[in-house]
Image 1 (cartoon, rainbow, N blue to C red):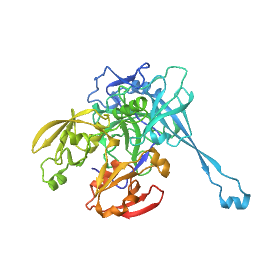
Image 2 (image 1 turned 120 degrees about the horizontal axis):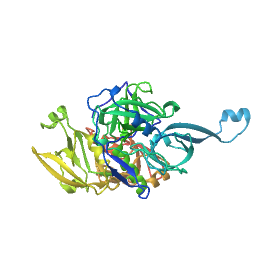
Image 3 (image 1 turned 135 degrees about the vertical axis):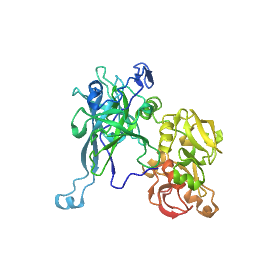
Image 4 (image 1 turned 135 degrees about the horizontal axis):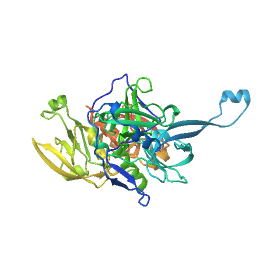
Length: 460
């Protein structure tokens, strides 16, 4: 995976962007389902920015982009110092206000924004381009992809953005970013698509569109649109040594965003399907190390038990080069495509095996039913009840111990939650399995919290 230089700071913004190529809209009588409208393939070819008309796309988009205000109220314990001088005053409340952007996606008031824009909010207020304000209700979130869905009840039909096909955009294509940077409402900037399938976390979980359209704090949750005004992404991050825009910004692709909000509308949560494989993207050094000639694609190093990949016959050493009609050069592209699918969807996986290409249909597995094993320790994701009982926000659970070396500690270890491994936060199964798969030795230092709430640091 490519790594960003240490000088660059990935900064979360308060605004977002929308992407487009094919047009989608939500029918009022068919809530939760996105319908394909007629695509317009007309393009301005070999024209400079001065010869392209951005006005129609800008005019259509600014009315669909809103200002989101996040009000957070937290309690501050009484200070012993203040008590000494002023007497006991009890807990005090502190109010913080955060701002960002959002995009109206239906005429009846559904709005997509970033999860970090609305995180921990006690009250959400949305202001439209016509200066009308509404209290918004949170419908659901996907923290992994930094997407949140809001709903407002307006007295009139609202202008909304249509979804485009983010897979269809090309590097070098003109785009507009629309949002509210620094509380400057309805700000439009122009740039080009600089790269696709960019993974900032180096774990392949996220896959962003990179653009050089100017994006700053306040833009998070705003729209990234093409010159036809179609939503192709939601702006979420910048790469900057200062915290302000210095050349590049990143957006969640519209195809991923659209799938997330459909899931939130229909199911109340995100339906995440997985192939059930581990490995890495190929390059010259990795190919030489494992003794193969191919330098592009995703190399399968391990297949998860009971996964769709195992049932379909994928094995270690297979190289994935295409999913359906999408070419795969690395993990970010693979994950970006799988993130648009649901459990039980069938994906045609093109692999190279022994120098020959073959197509294997794989039924995606629901992520939550898969476990991961390392050094005789089987892990699984924690659920909401675990988090509530132990008062934690993230971690993974030790499901079972099969390594005889730790048999005498089974009663303590089984059911315990791992908070970090070798100092790395154990956010979920994906980040943990990705980290452990790269370890050269089988031993790791685990910080755990047991079922009874006791904390231990152990090496196993």
